[in-house]
Length: 224
Figure (tube, rainbow, N blue to C red):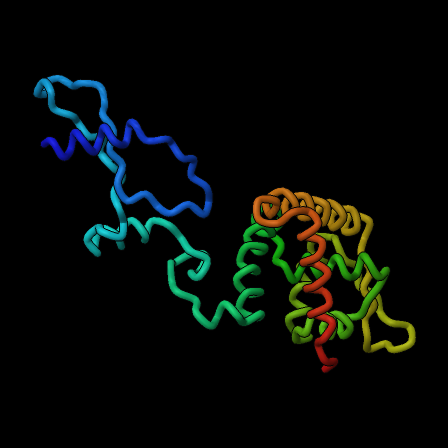
């Protein structure tokens, strides 16, 4: 008991040293606290210390560590990525899950459109006109898939089909006034939603840089 009291006294009398980032870790801390009910007079009460994870039994240490996600795990599911983390295609696919969720919330569910239908309408409106063959090449999709998207857009009154005067077998596609107005609203809503929801992970400058880098990556695609 005398050792405990002497040690506490020496800590109190010693000069306090501020801890810096590079300070050595203090392995023990002991200081007298106010008397509590039932304490024995003359006996020093030592304040409890925070648990040391290094000395904690393995199962409990693992349980505490499991509650903290790491950058080496999948965003959901808690699986180790290992070498997958170095693959650009894998990271783009994981990020695509996030962007698709934004699209579904802003455009997909409210308007009943899929990403391909929105993209087809946006390309037609941006270019004034386009052909189904051009859209299939631009998006690397089959002509039949493009046709299904056009059928839906035409049914909503967003797209108008016309026969190509130079080739009666071909079609020219135009966005209607309603289609141009709708796609403009959808694009603006998507831009605002992405800027707002991704601001916690990426600054505005980083978002712009990421878009430019992804665009450069997409431009490496070889023509079919």
